Length: 578
Image (cartoon, rainbow, N blue to C red; front, side, top):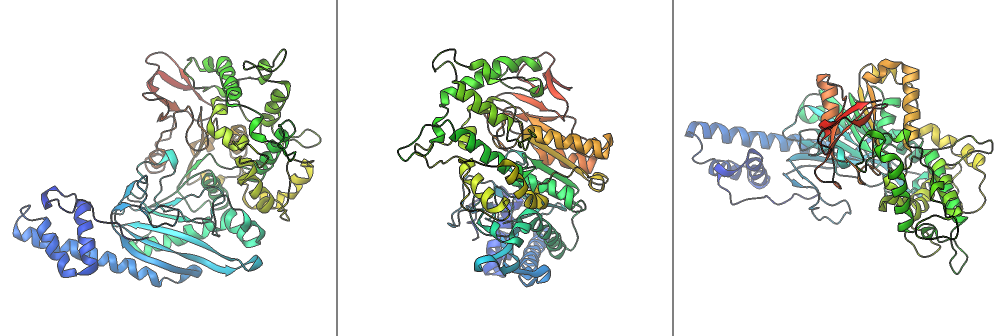
């Protein structure tokens, strides 16, 4: 990454913030340390006595020079099989885009001046001569708050996200802006986040499953000690999707690494999620219209109007179960919606679903099963997100040909055939006959590495705290699976584990964010309060992007938000009850 330009260069010293003074000092220091002293004196002119200015400019200049020296010294770090490729001070500004273009990404938040360290751990040549290594991005703010955070990944990883700790809706402003030292990893391989081709290499599977998380966390803490001269007072893990899975992995495999974990929409039982994605394509292919070559056009099984019809049916039956018709279904487990109520009595019309469509919805929501009827994954609950672009993009796509562009057919098929199956099977066809018992057997080896579904947490629970959450309209992860896991956690560790691990389910929210939902909340604040001040999250206030002006409490399972009277737009009008 290249340094960003200094902002507001024309401001007088009296109008500058401390961060802007430091930015100016940083730019001058890089080229001329004497110039740095002169710049500091100019920016502070008229703000204090001469003696105070002399002391201030010397202190700030010294601090900047010292920080630069400590940062560049990290380039020679050689422990842990590490090759550091970048170690430089970076001024306050926006991070660069993740596409490698070198452009500043205006959509990203402004982050403070920090030491940027990048490199690779255990670089090697693997299967088919491909180069592998655990890439890392570490950002150490000059104004450190004594805390460390791991910034979780997404999809199949592969690209090195700027380690700023801005995990979707859960952290705003990002952790780096708050003073956290933050690290991220590419998961042990390079590639686009939908690319699972690394799965043909044994060590790459291990790195992605858990080893990259372990190695980069240990390295990050060591770099913190080297740069600041002391270890972190508190360590946190923040992630959603694959980052959420990494959070669960940390609590299960690495229970001493973190004091607090935020695990959002985690890909719990990842191998079985992959089977479910294949199941959906198989179900839809059976009733889809065909293109000229005879291939099923998956996107045309349901129109947008069909899905809106289902959404309306779900709301009609279940919206008021929590005491208020507001478009948010909090009491989701009491919702017994079945799409059969929408079945056409005659031919297909705009106001009903065909028998085939009803059957497909039932099969997709129930999930795949073995020959003896045992559930492999699911069931999925019905919620408003079924009419969202997110659900269509995941299950149906919009391709008008037999080449599906649904995520199940792209990301899903790739990671299933190359990463989950042992041995990998690049030509796997989910649309033909599939032996679900056989594929369940073939994914168990990878499942053992990274499915993140162990309920045995007594070491972690004795010292750490974890918030797990999931959107009830998550298009890929079934909330029932998380509830099943959490109930096992309580059974195995005892009721007292609720004092260390809590699960929150968010009506209407699609994967990690979005949907007709209260999807704006700050889980970093919540986990810090729990870890550092002992303030357990009995309810977490959330607001909405899509429904302006409302707030709701997010309640720890098994409680749900119930309307008790008052302003229907306010979270204060709801109580968390079973």
